[in-house]
Length: 113
Length: 112
Image (cartoon, rainbow over all chains, first blue to last red):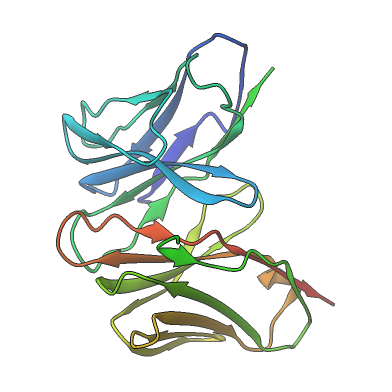
């Protein structure tokens, strides 16, 4: 079945530590996105990539980094510079063209301990 | 002003009620309108997708777009407790990158 796989489902980070969230898709989609979801704030765009080896900052990119070395993969690193990383992180993909919908992974819940 | 406004609720209704969920937007370039349903601790799943103005029906769900008023709605008929979830509207525009812009989501509770 085609879809988006995020791992891990739950992740705990110590203060000052970098952690990487995985996102893999087998939908052959060109565009991939990372969103952060906090209670009552909806989805906020962190980074997006429309093509391999290229990505752009979203609305809240500070403290995060990404790479897009393969079409299928778009990992997100939450760095120690991100002061409030506890949140639910969602990865999504679209074909990158008009008239298409976004497909989402099941999310990663990151907690700082 | 945010590009997409959506009342976060919660909206609480009895089983069997007709539910109306709404979003307003400010960018007249939006042409594609989507509704997602998100259960707690899960990723959003697409419910309805419409292009430009008009209505679209799928089972108990009807999506309505009024571009002149910059207003979209999702109606749920004969609501069920299993419809309890957060409903997010999303929109994207022609030209450029088609990145969807999301509303905050409305929490719906359907009680037996």
